[in-house]
Length: 193
Image 1 (cartoon, one colour):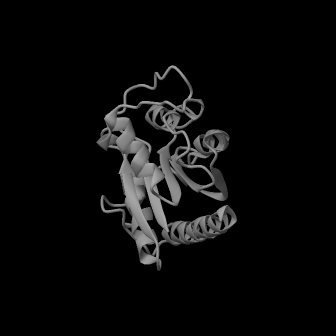
Image 2 (cartoon, rainbow, N blue to C red):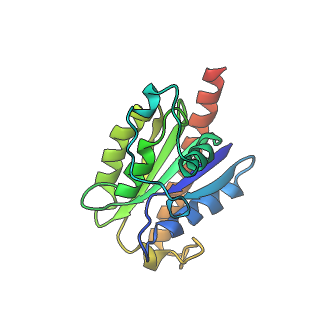
Image 3 (cartoon, rainbow, N blue to C red):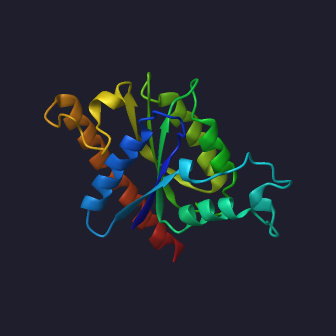
């Protein structure tokens, strides 16, 4: 299974990239699975201004940067979204990127991972309402990490102290959530045949 790990923050001094690396490291430890980070910082996506919604435009002509982003998302079997919570929701950069998607995520599973003062719970709740419109399925479990991500994870996406109860709990949560993602990906893949 090929998994896209989308970093939903383009802010300087962000910590979402640490979480994306953590997820990638764990996915790559599992057999027959590969995680690839898709960082919105690497794409110069203009504000979405297409005349017609993407799913309703068979003659859609997108700029090369958008096309590159859509191809990176569309060639994967599953998606993990890593987002901070801004003002009780997910980021505007992530919203803009998602608005470009037409059928790249159709019948594919999405795992949500958020962080912030409330663990990103409201960002997760809002994202759960968006993905059905993109024809994707969010897995029931989500990972929510309250505050202090910069203290818990280093820049390589490794837990600073893996022996703490908090670190063990986070590691277990990710393991279970990734197991769910793999299950949903396999089930949806079989159902599509």
